[in-house]
Image (tube, rainbow, N blue to C red; front, top):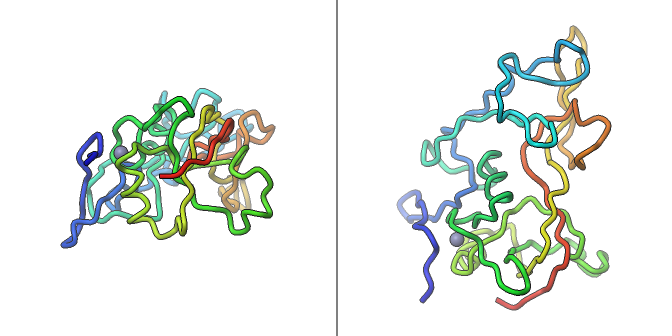
Length: 212
Ligand SMILES: [Zn+2]
């Protein structure tokens, strides 16, 4: 039997496994307190901006405290810092150990699109915010993530960093910052200075569907 690369955090009387990337209720969003329009008026910033608040493309990221295990797991949410770390370092989104890679690429478990036949070539070129997995955790993900429905296992040779998921904030009435609906934004977008990122988005290229 294969075991995850790292022991899984569990929660509750049933010992539910809690994925590495999941946000806990004790991890608080502290963005609002410090988010401002930059002194040059050309975009967002933090009152006390620090290195690490922006990614290498200059996009500002939401600020959350990081305290995995604090409070309850919010299974539907990912912690921005851990999601980004898992994507960039190719960590398993479930256990946080190294994701599985073979000659066909890294292993991803994806929820199928609503109408797969309506998306020619899927998942080639699909945008994805769910980091890869290690082999043992692929089974855990399927067993415990009902949103996956009937999941697809995909090997990806080139998960290409594409952009970010998050929302625009622009000054509204009284100079207050007002947020927009969540959206994907490609790096290099002309309005990126007004965008607050929550998750890293990768484009899946050179994909192969595999059986578990
Ligand atoms: Zn794992």
